[in-house]
Length: 299
Image: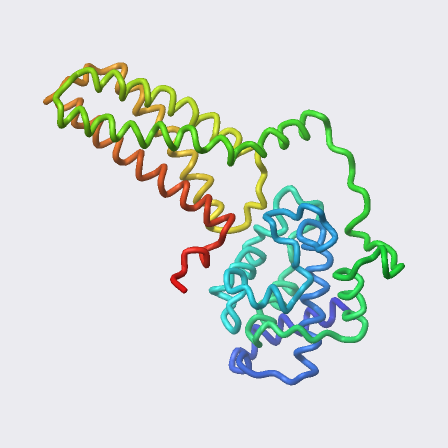
């Protein structure tokens, strides 16, 4: 019955686009039930309310009212602009390391239709009971734990160790950010004072800052953040590129005789400015992952 419902939803989405803006209450409940089952089966293990530390600090996937109100995930009526739909549609969620299979075409169609009709939260009695069980306090209600909160398979020690080290990524960012940024200030003083001693300072800042940036990038890869948003992916790859850029800049400052008024010195300064901008943008995106884009809205 479930597969038949999802198939009908898929055909409805493909063959009746003109009805996207309106729907009957009965259809809305069926669509919402289908999406609820999709989230329960393939999202709740990593983003459920039962988890002490849900991935990506996103632990309310079964709370439809809350998730529909978050415009960073769901743009009501517009699946193409909804981050959540795009991630599911492109098989980026569930993630590659998830134990469940990606959503089927029928499930994707159900999710798309749900967003098109405004991401309603009304469920059938059966699904509503399931929702209450998932979001409620299970200890006090006496209900059994859902399958998604069952004990997970123990991970190898090395895997757990690397994941633990990755948690220090955020703390490690301040060191290279400060050094690589101050290197620009050092070069600015060199340009004003015309003293070669500032080049020694710049080289020192670049060498230590680049080494710190490489370490920070490695910790970032070990961190295993949820990794389901464009912001995260941009931060991840831009941070990696920044570390590589830092190493190149440090190498140039050592290998080439970058004296004042030489092409090498001019190229080094351009490299420093570009690197500082990359550092700033990477840090900005990292902050956005924690505080969201709304943190920068002018209220």
